[in-house]
Structure formats: C-alpha cells, structure tokens
Length: 226
Image (cartoon, rainbow, N blue to C red; front, side, top):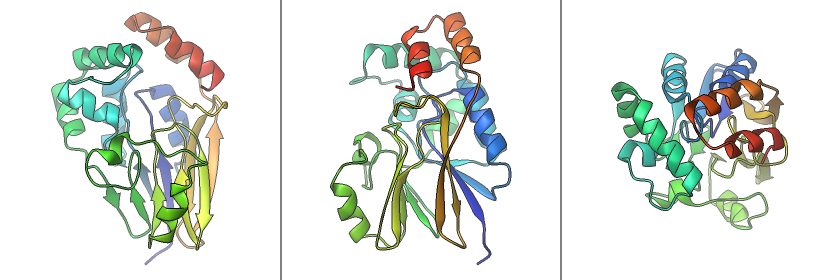
C-alpha cells in the first residue's frame, strides 16, 4: 500500500469561505474525508456540496445533514432550526439527494469515521464526545483503526496503544476559542497526525448571513470561536 496524505475535516456547516481556505492547505493531500455536518447554519449549502462533489470529499452524515435531508428539525435550538429551514428553501434538488445518501460511517484502511461517536444507528450522529470524556479510552482499547469524530466543533486528539481518537475541529464554526478554521492531516506512512488551523474571511460570511436574514449570533460566534 503506497504512502499517502489524508486531509480530514468536519462541521463545515455551509461556510464556503472557510472551506475554500482549508482546501488550499489540503491541496497536496491524496484524499479528503469529512466527519459530517456539511450543511446547516451558514448560507452556502449548494456551493459547499458542489465543492464536496467536485473534490470527491467523502463524508459521513451529520445531525444537521440528516435534519435538512428529512426536513425535520425537532430537538434543534431556534437558531439552528431557522437556518435549517432557510437551507431547505434554497438547496437544489440534486444537492438534497446527495445529502440524503450520506452514510452513517466510513471505514478506510486507517480510519473509522463517524459524526458523533463510534456506534451504529442514530447515536453515531447525535452523541457528543468531548476531549476529556473517559469513554475515549474504551474506544481506543477496542479498535484496530484510528477513530475520527466531529460534532463538538472542538479540535483534539487522544493517542493510546498506537491508535488515535481525534476530532479535526470545525471548518465552519469552531467552538474551542480559536476562530480559525480547523482541519487535520494524516500521513499514512508514519501514521502521524497534525492538527492545523487557518485564517479566513469571517466578514464575508457575516455579510452573507445578513443578506440571508439569519441570526446575527451566527456571526458573533465566528469572531469569538465559540
């Protein structure tokens, strides 16, 4: 098996300017994987999905992706719900179909990828695993591959028994105090992981949020990284 560099992203949330900057940094990667929530919150769902298709980015389904595909926002807060409704109004049919076909998990020679946690069924999309969660050690004791999750929008990595449980962080809405778009690069030869960040034009996104009539809170949290 030849050596390769894999880019790993998550939680783009239809933030096109952030995604474009991250992809510039991942240009040397042989493949790119996503831990879900391709859409939701921000106003570029069609453009982001089309980038995923064009760049052959393989993604699992996130809870926002599923909610928008099903047009079912039960359990979401008001801001997420309003953004989801807006996404349903503007998303093109072919892109909605693409969302509806996203798998719950992806398995490669090196990774098992989920949105929320390693599980089958709904739990894989909705359960949060935070950096300090002791269940991470249990997952690492019982895996033959590295594990990728998203959902929390917090970038972290835990290594045990030569296996890594990691969250590349959020491209489109970081919540770990660092407003820069987050991503990861994994070298399959050395099995080394790098957690990375890059600046992008937040003001451009906020102007689009305002034009779309979405909550201004979606802008303020981008500047704060939370």
